[in-house]
Length: 300
Ligand SMILES: [Zn+2]
Image 1 (tube, rainbow, N blue to C red):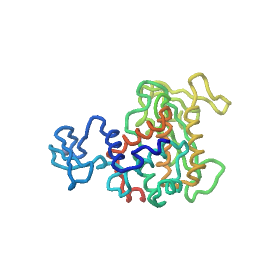
Image 2: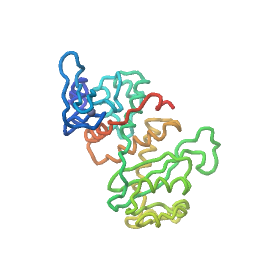
Image 3: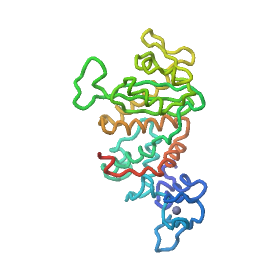
Image 4: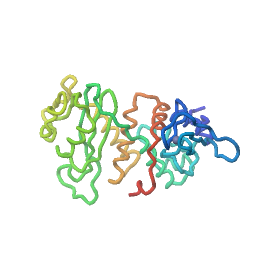
């Protein structure tokens, strides 16, 4: 017996009930008007299973309406298995592997993984809102389309990551790592109450972060300094290590257009690293609501 033989991975009806319990722990919520009362279950052979009727707005809905699973022809139990596999595999899972494991086409598997990454996006709130430390750092990956290889990293794709040591990580695929690019991200994502730790790179000095946050402290890698008590960027560097090993080992080549989605996937696993595989997967299912992704948007 492994968890993969659990009912929600075998049967679409069991999967729907499992998903309802995750998304609606306190009972159904109408996705059309937000009502939680006067909601009735439509039963009988003329209705598809899991259909509800809202007495307030008179619309009908199921648990997948407005979610990344909406209007999918893939049975819900395969969706739930894909979510579990992607959440429990430390370095991710390729669409080729998922295609073989789920018995769906490669194209379908590819589309499913991108939809699941959409469900993994963070739900707002500021990092460091409890006044705790936030590490910020950038790393370089692969090669920008058409870019000439130079001595510096400017031909590579840049990823900027923020790690709340007591919470999550958020990564951004950025055009460059100038103060003008990084500062607005820091201001939008990090609480002014937090202490920000970076290395001594010029862009962080130029951004005058000490004026925006409670404190800004730096470690100077140039003189071989990697930590001064709590002042370090080891957590974000650990994340970069996992991200790069996963990209190389599992995904091989990630196009510039999709790099942000892969970063979001690694963010999600790292942010939920202290949970069990099952809890991490349930957290992803909770994120499915209101994040419907059209094929047009993925391909664009
Ligand atoms: Zn309603």
